[in-house]
Image (cartoon, rainbow, N blue to C red; front, side, top):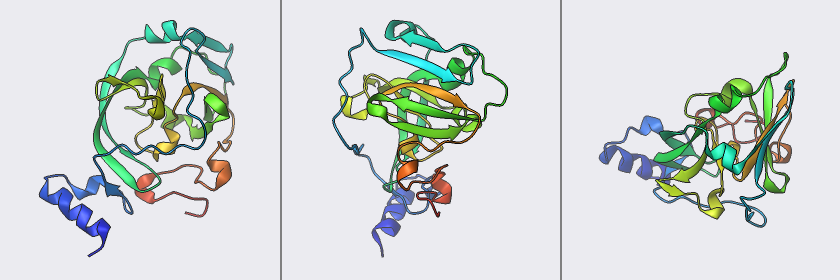
Length: 203
């Protein structure tokens, strides 16, 4: 019996439906850290969050302004392209939809390119960006984000592979067509549905 088969049987014995685990994934209680390069160290006095692209007027918020927005709590499963999944993770933050409603988007917008420190980007269709449960969050399991997990703020998009849940997020650009982000330019799938195993270009 393979490791993945044993992992699924362990889920069943613990009362968790294996249907929650995408093909090719294994469940873990750990929260692995996967990152290339230095970990950004934010200065909240100069931190900002900006929106540009196909908007009537670009918007910039300071940390204090962003922190003043209403927050919600979300419990969700997450799935990393490196094959681990973690169930019932708990986050608190500002719904992406609430931020979207604060900007004036121009006609013809179809996608966003989410931006982070050190030039990292990730793309997605607008309807996926605005899905229920997506947050700009600064807490995990009731505690402030650790630096290695995106402090001071990260995006959470649980229904796509976790590279789309951009750490150290600093804003997004509204686009009229799809545009590959960092990992999409380096072999990862343009969409990234874990339940379809859309890991790489040809999947």
